[in-house]
Length: 375
Ligand SMILES: *Cc1c(COP(=O)(O)O)cnc(C)c1O
Image (tube, rainbow, N blue to C red; front, side, top):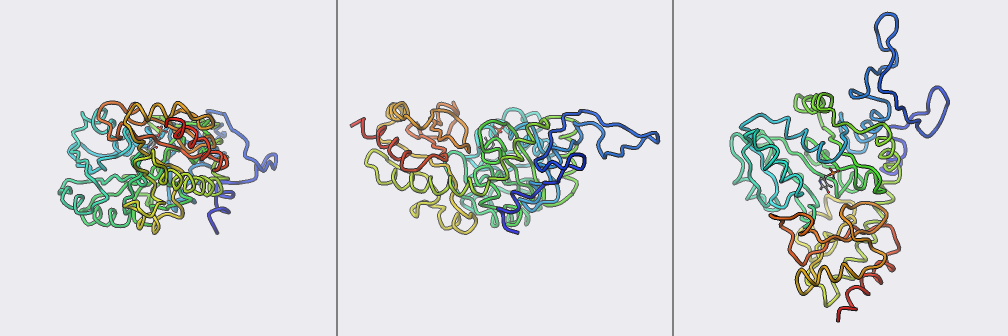
């Protein structure tokens, strides 16, 4: 089956009691035992499992081609569960432009874990080969990266990780399974902030880990999900499930709109540089063309004139909203360096644009007004 059909039907079952086609939201935290002490409904306590979370985890297994999934209350909680599954002394290689929250998690929160950390440019396989050591247990990659839109070759990175007995984990939040299936390319785990495209409407926070194998590492993640308890509510799972049904169509539209906007920005004299993997001049374009079914909805660009000019431009948009986050129907623009704070790798004149589902010509007119009125 094709992704559009999978997205609609994965995790869908007609409710046995009412024959409802849309899934009911089951808010019960606890489930009855029978006189023998068994749980005939298959559920015990909703931190461990509940019908709406099961639907979501099953659907994401189908969409990513995995055998198991663990849903969390945020993308960061999902990412934390992966790092908490490591042992003290394990060595981790991560991209030097990794999502800022992931870097903070590794450097601050996990510091007492005693992990060895190396942040390297993973777009260059030679740097990864130089960074791996006998204790390297995990290679983290993020493609496209946020906010610099770097493209990492998943197949190649996973192969290097595996030849060193390390696992390869891919944060695929910006790509989504509508564009890339990292497990098919050799990754062992794929991680998403479901807050973004999967939920897709900017109204639910969540995260998920999907695993290629039901191995000890994934079992540990499931233990952390159950015992740590950073789980999404049934309603939040229901909202992400609802988002998944339209994911392939939304991502296609986001990608088309973003390509049009990126091409416009690339030709604008007030724009110094555009970061979008769909532009042929992007250093990752060749790999993106192979491993992505489209180039996604996120663009970063540098305006001429530094930080002040970037704020000035962002201050002039009328349709696009000034806010953080990405992946929803409303286009959002953000000055990334001031959001990320000290240690950011985002240039001071960089704006990140999450291209929404408005008509691209309206977005281009909005950007044109904001850029041109500065002259
Ligand atoms: C947003 C984001 C996260 C964090 O997810 P939350 O749902 O905000 O906790 C992690 N990785 C990437 C690439 C993101 O864009």
